[in-house]
Image (cartoon, rainbow, N blue to C red; front, side, top):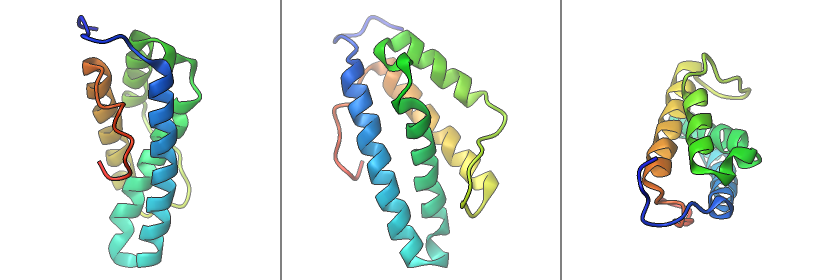
Length: 119
């Protein structure tokens, strides 16, 4: 990683992942209530939930380099098993997008302090 201006905070990263996990479940419920026109939003929220679930309990959150390595492994993964989604291809695209977003945040070591629901 580049020379960060602040130290990596694994606890903050886990807190961010936990909050995003909870928000994604709320977003899925809201999209589900809206019906057919919100299927893409449901898949996007489900993708965020999948990513957060895969990373929030991992030991790799303690070190920036290990977290970046785990993200790279997940991005390179062939498929992302999930149930209850509407479109597998769209879901996988959203998962990869979420992983790339996290990879950028990890590389820059910023954005994890933003814990509001809407980002």
